[in-house]
Image (cartoon, rainbow over all chains, first blue to last red; front, top):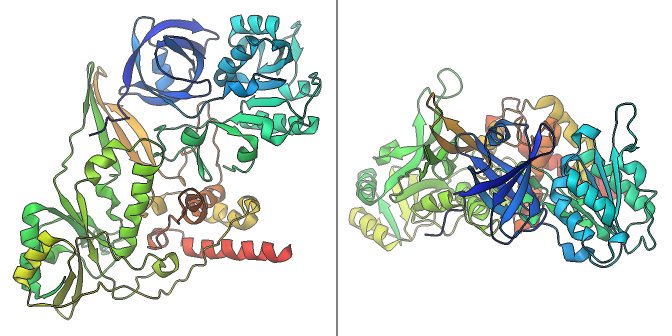
Length: 263
Length: 340
């Protein structure tokens, strides 16, 4: 009989990186093919499973950035370096980073939506023409920022616009929704530029409107959808949108496809 | 091979089959229905032919043996994980044509959507075979003719039709043929009865434009539907489930992982971390369900998911008719087409 895809495997927690009180990155031992944008089902026996996107990839690890918002993730936060979590995956298609190698790219990411594109942004930062790669990252407030080390690194290598929706008096950085900064991005050939948009549904909708207004071609826009998959295997049904299953056909979709996907 | 059996002969044949197979069939449970003194017909294991309800459509579908409402997948004790045991001894499920067509839909999702088969479904599916119950007349609310599921020519071991105290069986399995032949009064060609018309006709739209997703035809269901999800739980083709872990000791060290039937009509189905929810109104949920059954599934797999059994219409406490909804959908699409 074939192996049972529902059986999770144990993976050691190599490192825990806190970002905020509620958001930690767990570096998990894993060797195997994995792409940014894919996800794992993180499993705590007796508590449940939760789909978590891959926020970083190394030769012998994957990083999962987890927000403490539910029964499973609360329990994950009770685990420490040296202990292990159960995983299954990776699932989903993930981003094809090779599409973004040549020419201009604009990534628009909001909140925890930065997780699934973190690997993409890091890849962009390492490209020879990194100055043509533009990234707008938005968080709710300065205290909600994730990936501080990366933000510093990205700011040096590519065109990073970091913004917050709101901030206490005296904050000197950008304030405003990510959409506010899309018109100002310096692009030479917008009709050839690629765009990646990941974040909460409203942020994605309005960002795409701005991108289209700027002249981005629909076929050059890529989005990643968030749903609560129970299986990751195309069976449980929770992530279906129209004829597509986010866990099988996504979570990354081209806009020409996703624009007709109505929840 | 067809045979005619007396009531006694049929009982003996089934008894003999029962030696090699468990028999899972619709059974009338007297007084166990939703209202006082109302019966319910639902599936159960039977030992005698007389226990099988052959004349009335079951209120609940056969699928509960393949996809139980609550199915334990794993047991967790301390550090060990163990697959839950399952009785996978051979079983014959008695189904009508619509339900036999529904099996194909269940297989499609659990075995052929995505690269991986569902291990737990496969485990039980391999031990299941089917017996076809013929339909001499249309059931109330059924629209199998519209869905082209009124007739099943294959996929069963044998069929059974009762008529005037005699049992007519069309047998497609050699082993079963020997058993039926031994108890038969005579041998003659038998075709399982099937209906050629229903009281309810449904016009399934050939093409569904995207504009219909935002149409106001769904609004009435926001008013009428109470999102109880019964339509999903009686549907022979609904396959959705939710994972559920539980622990049952004070120290939390022992527990299990289950999957339980999920309904796209019920609150929580589209919840994501942090409180987001994709379909909040019942109208949106109705649209999601109805379009899956007569459009989205077809877009992916080439045929419609709905088999026209009509159980969703039978069970709805708000008297919402799926069949009517599809007809309204079709009319709205045609009307929009005429406007262009």
